[in-house]
Length: 370
Image: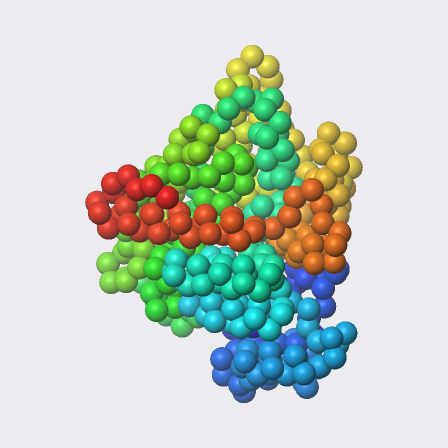
């Protein structure tokens, strides 16, 4: 692992997810750009001190010196966005596959550099767009793909939070500080942090790409990067949609929700209630689908990634674990019918979404092609 040391949030999530997945073990790390903090973090986490390193460069060099059956198999990068590209490229050039937190990079230039390195080295990358790991999200994708609901007409997706809605929220808050700093977050703020999740969810469930966007990104007074925004978009299949992403909407804790309206049905899922999905029809009763390993109406592939019977909720950590599990299976030749994680193509689509959103907003909310 690179990053994720003391004071970090997402590093702990990745470690828990890897343990739940059951096919990964954390054996080495450079957990901070400060060597002393990295070593202190490694001790807390329980990694062998001899394999806790002061930098990712030191880690890669030392691990390469180990016998093949003892060195690391892959690298998990959980740093702020501006520190994604360099370690990802270095890891792939050293022969290691990469798990990387979204977005892929802080800019399109760095995203393309990562993609070029993957092409050049033949290494694989999984990007943790967490919400595609939820069972009912996968079931929603299968239902739309089956064609039984007809074509997608409209998508309404939102990801709204309130944790940055006050000036005081930035005081002494490491997680807030880097997200509102363009030097660390990159070109986008809230649209990069959570808007990419909303866009990815829309593309994942519909099986289509966002092709055009008209966006307006704004920020509270005194801030240097977007913390609120909304967009209209077009899908490759002809449908249209709306997307809202904000970290300053008071009263919304972590409200990721999506509605997909097709010719014959409307499908609705909300991350804060992830184990239920509503499907509405015009001429028949509304259906409520529930998650659970004993729900026979779910597809076999969806049932296979669940760990508990219906009524025993699985959530964010288990969805994250499904991504780790799928990537581990892929590396060891046991992949399912779909990758089970966001691929390079998926995450480059997310970076194009960001670039187009920023351009549209800068030009006064005009339509921009991706």
